Length: 104
Image 1 (cartoon, rainbow, N blue to C red):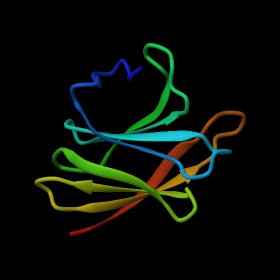
Image 2 (image 1 turned 30 degrees about the vertical axis):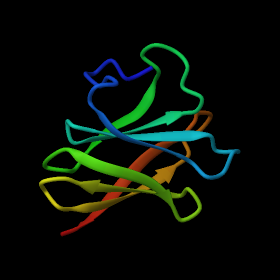
Image 3 (image 1 turned 45 degrees about the horizontal axis):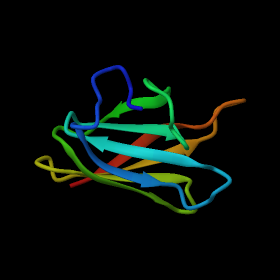
């Protein structure tokens, strides 16, 4: 159940689930510098996702939900950056992420 734009299980480096069961979201980080947000459970082939969100200059090592699931924090590998992504509910849908800030 990965996006059809090149993400697959072999390129995913990290997965995190939201802490609030009412939100039911998954976020992934991959070796192609991308962060994606999925509804959970993600049970269909080529499941729709929000993203990919790109900001890292290299692979993304890890992702985690923070601030009551209103933010996703991603940690880059070789680029040594941390990005904070705001989780914004989409009207009538799961969620999308917008915005980021990076710190070396």
